[in-house]
Amino acid sequence: MPIYFQLTSSSLPISLESIGNQWPQPSIKRPHGYPYYHWLQTEQGCGEVFIADKRILLTPGQGVLIAPFIPHTYSPVTEWQTNFATFKGGIVTDFLNTINIQSYIQTEDSTHFSFSDWINQMIDNHQKNALTDSDLSVACYQFLLYFHQNKPQELCHIPSEQEKYLLPIIHEIETNYAEQLSIEILAKKNYISHQYLNRIFRQQFHKSPYQYLIDFRLNKSKELLISQPELTIQEISFSVGFQSPSQFIALFKKKTAFTPKQFRKLYC
Image (cartoon, rainbow, N blue to C red; front, side, top):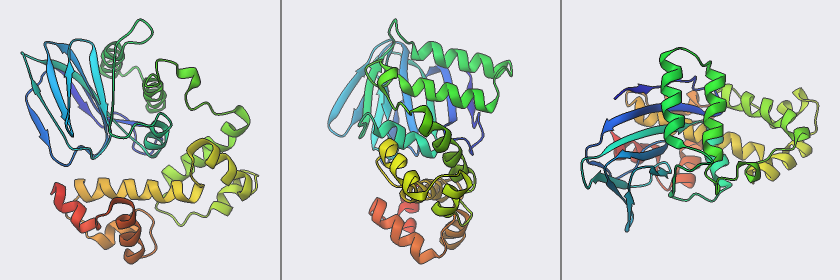
């Protein structure tokens, strides 16, 4: 029952926060959810997942992808063995928003794609040191493609003309988010106008590049609030790129309905 954490660099657009298989699954209660997208699938036996007032029964091959910070519980119905994977990265939320996942999505292995085979293969490759960080990030992207009626070709298609601009800018944002980035400078570095950059971001992510940057910074701040309770709100504010704690607190509360301090108390 191997379990691994932080398999890929956190600077990548999509990274694998944890993965495991052949896990004897105990009961879990998460009244405030989990910080990342969480895939849970039955290998053997049967378990039940409760999200809001919905009971989801998971038999072998069936799984559920749960969005971050969604309260949920799960427990065995019979002796229960599971596999799981958790995904993080600024592009993950925007990517999965294209299939309108609000709290969870349920699916299962099929002849078209096996989630359990993917997890087993990733663990095997990791144990053999057979994948680079970028290879594994691409594999995570492919895994997530299959959450739209098993028709990945219809999901999140980026025209090649846009792709050559979007991908390096996304990488720049998600690598250097703590710096004082300017959308105008990002556009200029990639030899396009900021108007064109704004247009292709809205076409792909339904938000401006500035909002993408703000959302990514807020997601990074959530990770720090939970994982590093010794950091002050001011330290977190500056470390994720906000110019002042007051700006950070105002944007955080607007996005989550909590102040950073209130949010931290939910988990620490």
